[in-house]
Image (tube, rainbow, N blue to C red; front, side, top):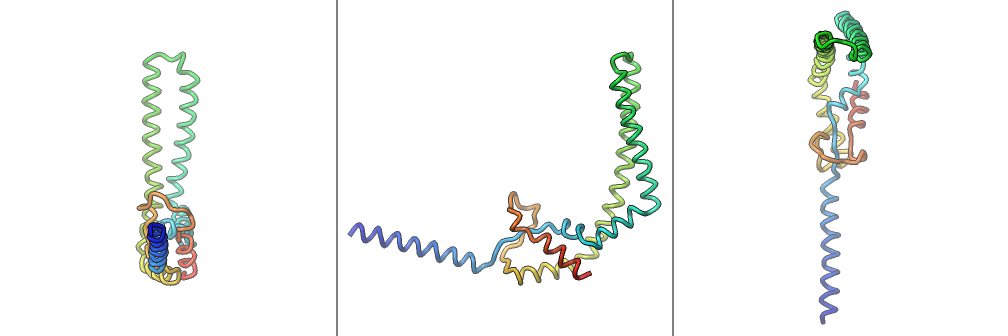
Length: 174
């Protein structure tokens, strides 16, 4: 009798596990997406960012950034080479000059970054309706039961990501 009950319990447990996994499969698969990456990797986004980078203001800021960066590197080399023979006052003055140059570099770098971010935000707003369409289509065709933003997931194998598919569909739509 004990063997029969044990066997019955095992068979019931196996059937229950099989049924639960079947129910989970019927609900659809799980996927993650990074919408910002999907949009910014589109051909349209690359074109817009290139347009921003070819703008006169951006080019001027980029030239200033490159100049400041070269000056900063030269100041660092000079300070490292001469620091041992500098007086305390000279070291303090050199550090202040480095800090000032670093501040200038960060300011100009921030302007460059902001110009690209503004273009990216405009593009995100512009493509938002198309992204929603593409997501609905992919959810239906891929049988996705749960779609999560990539930033909300601690770990997901690359096979769970539909980011590249979203980018491809957006490129086809444009």
